[in-house]
Image (cartoon, rainbow, N blue to C red):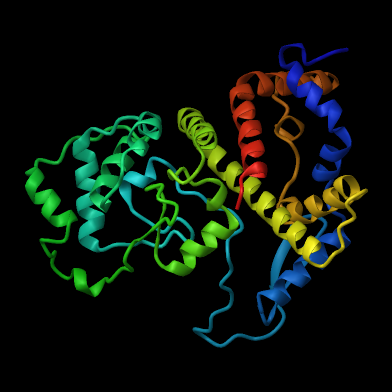
Length: 346
């Protein structure tokens, strides 16, 4: 039975790359999981901690030594994270570690300022205001306000001049010096969307994610336009696509780094290296994601009470078709996005 008549392009991709897709989505063995986390714990120097697996409850973090009161137990780096589009109106944070940045005055003034703008949809500014030069944080406040997907709130009855004075640091709020925040560092690509708490976070985000997601003018026009369309789609549907984009970017950049290292070491076989060798590098680059991946949505969605368990296979196939129909614009955009990232010069 052909079940993807309305989504033939995706069925074609499933068939063409069935082995690769199966390999990427294959759950790692318990031994592979344990080896991965043992290596991660050692690399992060998480002394006194161990990751253990339980057949009933999954993975858990266990203490294998005593800790003193007040001692730092664990400070770990998130794998992938993204700020909700609507939340960007409420606070300005580092695009990598999500620490608050700027100042108390900037945070409060900026929120009042954006609320007074009326907040048009973010997708409108993705193609319009991003074409304009951003000379200051104030200019980008306009763009972030336009880019928010949150609902407009009742305007604060404060004069615009007062709000701008607070936001731009001309007015000091009581006790604000007791809560110092790091200065905002702009994205080196000039997109005006990403800000950081330090050069360290800016460089890390560029290395792991943002170099493939930046919509700054330094990016070629076709690639930039496609990325802006991707942003429009994410804002118009579900900003979980940003998280997916970061996961894909992380994988591509890890793959590129491994492949470059392989070339430097002279281990790449040009006659036979484009298939097995390259895919093994891709699997290794994908490994951090595979350790958290469970199953595809249509495979794990709960069976409704009104569906008999004998009809489960049919139900899941219908859900799969529905997912392809509903998400087809997003998948097409992600497909274009992946192609752009894979061909984006560093």
